[in-house]
Image (cartoon, rainbow, N blue to C red; front, side, top):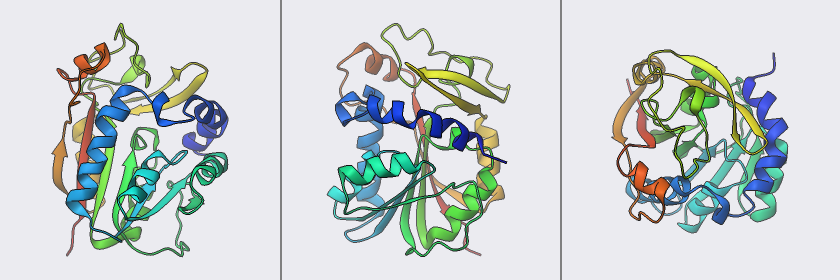
Length: 247
């Protein structure tokens, strides 16, 4: 059976690539929160020439940043068109097509010191298989970084990736009701979004043998627009830094 991720992202990849032809078109929480957070974690938990994988890399924004910091950068994505777009922007980075929700024991790649999953886990239904694949790819002491919209505040039927100036979609919603929503998250960009509580996320991590190293609710350093002023008061994102439980 085709996964929801494959169903929607293969439909939306052309719209996504056109919408985000360069980082200037990314929403401000992405450029002012996600990117600085990723850079900080790369500096803290990895060193020069470490292998870093971006799972669900899209058109390669994070992989290009990783490469700038002299790490060996890799990226995989469910969409062949996304991978092609990423390769066009930097052909030196090692990219491949993969559905992370499907079992894969034949990956001929090195072990990774860090694996980044940026705005991906809210699309994944088969989180157990995804985490099993990730666990196989990680170094013994490697780190898994999962970034998602904060489930307590920014989710559910009003989820919209590109927040507007009115911020009418930014509210708590019915937090305890876990559900899959189909939503237009940008102009012409319709996809699914799986809301889970924090309790559920922690149960998933523990079940799959991961320990929490750090939990971040990062804020923007610059408050250059109304969106950033809002997410400076209420967290827009949550970041889990995990390690495999070594027995």
